[in-house]
Image 1 (tube, rainbow, N blue to C red):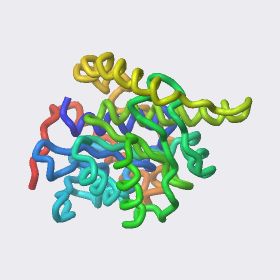
Image 2: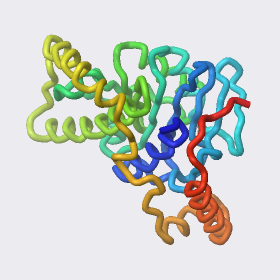
Image 3: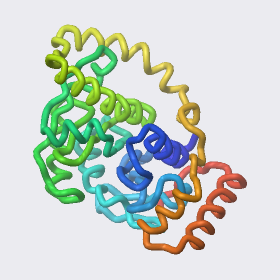
Length: 268
């Protein structure tokens, strides 16, 4: 599956799992030349995107190429890629449970074995959305041994060596947040000790990678997504466009997907 198609699929999965309303959050991948990334556009519903809507950004200069503006959080993605050469995919979402912990400004310890590769999920100090300060704060937090971080009063960011890994971690952070809140309510959350974390990380590294390398995001949600008339009406109000023009865009998107095989992005 092409990287473009994987991004489109990941967006639909975030909606399906309740981590996005279609517009919130952002997804990016590092391209093969490592100096360019592909990112979702600003204020465009995941359910209506095609590969042509994704935006290519040059990390060195910050210049971008595409039909739309990149996500308003593109600086965050760019600085995290700069700080973490091992990372090739980033997902930012506004999951309810993750956001609740972020509002409380707590740290989620490693609570279960399968989260050992994520590490403790701290809440970074507050900074305004889409600001340079937020981008720098998050990049700094993610150089300190964790593959996910909470943004104070905002949401969560998860990293991966590929998009499948980043998506798994993004979904896991939301589950961990729910476990953490539940455990605190009934008596207190107790994290694994360092020895248990190290052993679990080693086990799951060998257990997961052969599966993840061959796994397809298609198995997790149907490409094209469940889009209903009410979705289009609501989104037309959010985006400030007419329902007729949005419906036309949606039909054109479906035709494009049905007749065009996925292709790799060319850097312009």
